[in-house]
Length: 382
Image (tube, helix red, strand yellow):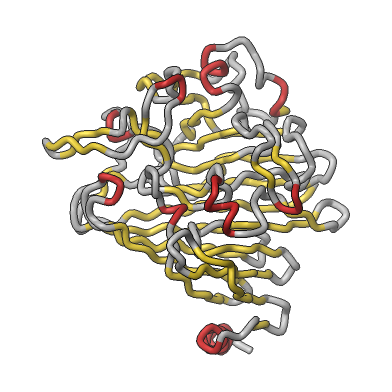
């Protein structure tokens, strides 16, 4: 069976409401009902399986990765992302588990920016230290809408293409933004994300993916024994509201020096102003030598399981967050409560508050231009 035949079968299956479509070498995608959003719109859950048995479940609600099962050094599979068993819990109060965030991932100071001589006011939905900011697209960001979804196959890689148009004025942003986000689960045990967007008016755009990872398994407890390498010599300093000051701080000699593999828990509670502001790690690292090409940004290893995750990206920044605000109130899959520092996020991005920081790489997309970037999460063992 060739890829074109499989795609045809898949689309026919979608049309007929079939439960699944399979290739000869175990590549498959299935689709099932996943409840409805708060307005009653039906959501779906897709299950993708690669030739090696890696399995990823993804909803068209927020492009949420609800589970991602990968093997350890003995071949035992475990689900390495935090999440919920049903859509209702995502709607009630998810801390962005597994979703696409936007129109602007991360924070914009005071929910305001100026563009081409005009000031725009955005929804403010986050207040660290009682300092208001616009976070992850606002009150109803892209994590809270149902995207159009289409299953695709390319050789031994299986994926989902998501499409959504954010209207002019959405959460205060100018311009209608047409987006395509493609998730791939590849034969090389890689979760690949391809982003593309265009607009009819100048607007800031900064899309990212927000999975919470624990390479020991989503229900295995602390991530403090994971080791981390980040290809960065500087971070964007923040104030008490976690808004960049514009200063780039060298990581050398600080708790943020992950240039060589370092246990996450070694310095997470060090006496350091930046650590105090974030309650631990919740900072954007400036990736060294950024040139817009796909390259290694970070590597994480979990010593007990032997699982390794490498992060590749075309983006200039990487937000490293350690689940400092998890407190057990988020009861996840299988009734497991997620406690403080039970997961980490590695969000590839342009730097926070870039619309108000002219020294940062620009996030302004204009008519006639194409926004495009790629991120890969590559899984292996050692």
